[in-house]
Length: 229
Image (tube, rainbow, N blue to C red; front, side, top):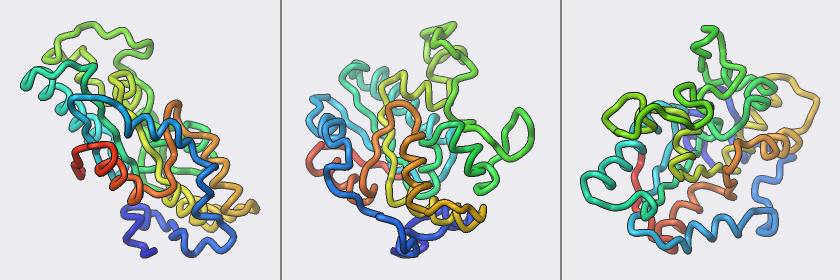
């Protein structure tokens, strides 16, 4: 696999999985939560949309997905319960799938030059996840034109509240793990770091063996419309 396959991850000095000599890049089929993934394929929805995301930019991700919901619901009259949106986070975007522990333990903010707006320093927490607009999910307005509504909440938590399913690319996770071991001079193996990362994904995230294989399956077998961000 080429370095380009990891997209922006390469900018952070992250090795490709092919360089991870001790890493099991592709686990066996039984290691994956195929039941949850298959539910996406079988879901009976009027509109199923797949966003292919490679850059760790939560604001852009939220903007496009909220626009999709608003357009489908208000412009085309499709009820929210008939819409399914999947965010396929691969390459550098895959780090948005990890929790605060992973961001601090593996210095993700420093690796990707992502600063925490609260401190101005490299983020030691997943700044894309938690909702500051409505921590408990209680929005001041239901009007999508009102900035106090969920439609203006650019957090991953808000997207999940609207039913968005996040996917994590395991190939990108392995590549990040290998690069992190080298970058931080860790004593752990890349495989150990990768498994730790898998244990510290955000709630509800589904890991797939590789995103470039999961995407065509979602398109062909699940009927998802593809959009690259």
